[in-house]
Length: 129
Image (cartoon, rainbow, N blue to C red):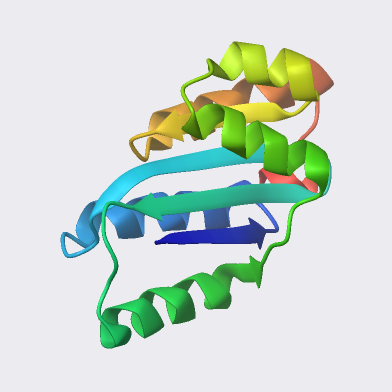
């Protein structure tokens, strides 16, 4: 079972990470975070299916933060590449996407990406707030 959502900014993405860390009933296999110019793509893949109540609760939580996402082919191929074991660096070069995190939900990787991106620009775009 997997969930693919588009979120507006880094703060919302970090809320998903926190939720995954505190919701021990969610059997997370991996979480992938991709930054795009106008937002964040977040994929959460679970090790097994949830019951209908849990599925509804998790989907409702994600829908409060963002919208279900149907990726363009480049992002779809990047997500597939990561899932099949390609390294994030190879995926970034091949598909020209910014892979922020892949694997265990990691707040630190997202915060470090935001910090370095803002430092390089000299200001904080809305998507990194």
